[in-house]
Length: 184
Image (cartoon, rainbow, N blue to C red; front, side):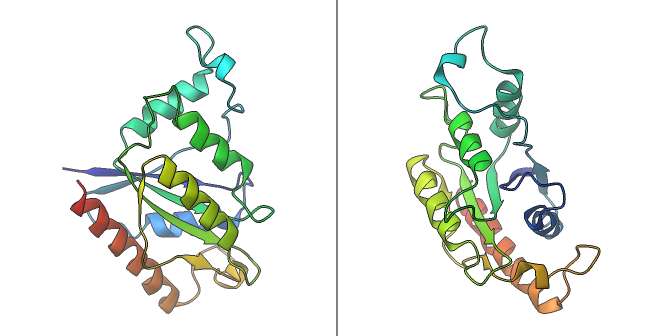
């Protein structure tokens, strides 16, 4: 049975490092796994007043429906101001509502944070983990995926420069797949 892995990218920028890294990770899943990029760029800010019959934005409905068919989530994110980018936090909020219908509940997740600097998205990674605990997402603990100097990991065509980096990425995917399988 094919397992769908929803990939959420925290950066909305067209040529973001996060999108490039997420594409590289998506190539590493084994047969039987279907990586699906879930677009969060069109989600209006969550407002409970809109989450009523006849008012729900179509983008919320489409996002929630797509995410319900997902078995696990891979979050690939930069850090904005020592935390999670607003678009990603908004996607968490949209997916967690209406109350009792969270798309995140009892799913498996993994986080890859990154930065062109040395801190490697540490703050975003840990803030995202806090939200995922509350949302009841079983999150991969090891190996940890903090990618510093991400700009130096990529070739001009945005592929990965070093085979050792690909092997590290594969170790993360393998551990994630193992966690998914154990919790299927």
